[in-house]
Length: 114
Length: 112
Image (cartoon, rainbow over all chains, first blue to last red; front, side, top):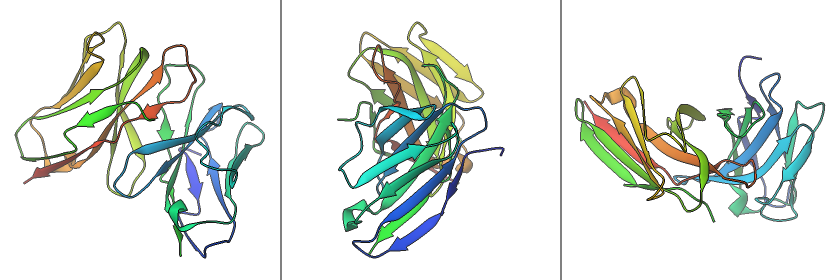
């Protein structure tokens, strides 16, 4: 596609349920990033993929959070046993490889945990 | 902890005025980038300045970088109501991970 696509755009779930958030990066972008943004706050780094491997997953807040990427394309962020503090917008971004690359962001998935 | 701290946290100006936002960071960097985020949307890349550059222009945007002070500034000249958004600086640590670390942002309001 022309840009980074994320789904769902909005997700409301009950505490304790699992959720999956999907990201389709720009074709040919081998680098993919997940960030979390709480209301009115900055971006919190979660995980970075280069191809299908994750050289840096230092931002995942707990073992309830996991992410995978397949085919050097689609990525899924999974949150197990959701908690109210997981409520946030989850942003995905992709870029060409290299340290100078700008990131192209999706519109985000807004997660609300009741 | 996140690098990149912008100030002010919020800025309100009148249309036509200039807006200056500052960013400080903690470690050596390869480059510094500025992004814009309209309310409820994803971020959009504005401009990148490399560590060996001191100033860069793009339209009404002017970015400066002072590596000795570990700081950068973003100037928007002749602001418009459509410039209302949050602005973030971001950088990658030199020699470190590929991750791009963002600051907390400056929320700019341009009043018509």
